[in-house]
Amino acid sequence: TTLGFGVWLLAPELGAIRVGGATVPPWTWIFVGLFLTQAWKSFGLGATFAIVKQSVPPNRLAMGFASTEVFRRIGFLVGPLLAAVLLSTTAGFVAGFRAVLVAALLFALGATVAQHFLYDASEDSIGKSFEGVGGVLADLRTLPATLRPLLVADTLIRFANGMVYVFFVIVVTDYLGVGFAAFGVTLRPDAFFGVLLGVEMVVAVATKLPVSKLAEYTGLKPVVGLGFLVYAVFPILLVNAPADQWVLVALFAFSGLRFAGLPAHKALIVGPAERDAGGRVT
Image (cartoon, rainbow, N blue to C red; front, side, top):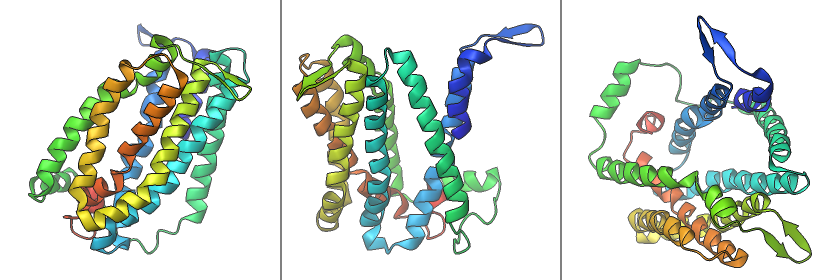
């Protein structure tokens, strides 16, 4: 991920390159950086699920995931707000985004160093060896029956969200073109979008633990269903919203509720798995 931010930062200077008889255009570096920055999701998500699975009693999985999610979402809260500050103090978006990339690179490098020196993996009962692709295929064939409907629903909701999520910034900054002006503060639409993401994360952090506690009494499925409902409704509300800053603040606060069901969602995924198989199931 750190390398990916570095590639993005240097992309304008790298330019086109020749490979054999073909010329690779400069925008290719954007996809190289994208491939690298997404690595933390591919490598880290399964490991996080597995560690929580082996550390928490089965009836406390939702609360266990809620605890880790709160810390993660605090990062998602601070990051967009810092980006909003950097964007608001620069003359244009390009210069501001390069400053954001520098900050992201430094934070990612610090996280890499901290993970290497501060995390003790000696007590883990996972990740000692890789059984090969055959082991992965065997895990897929032996997925618990209770997990299959959830994975179908999860795939559909991720597919639907993936179609629209990356365009939210365009809706706010271009389609609606809404900035912020209140309390003596004036923000361009790009900086205001960072504030909106911060509002979303405030609601996410504030609701995770209470909703996860509620799931211990109501069951996990109603809480997961609530999150799926917000996933479905929010894009429709956003694209039909008036160009009003306070309406957008309210909508992104509503959007934060979709994260309240994530701990219960994760608990449903790894709950049926064997104790040391949570990462593979994920």
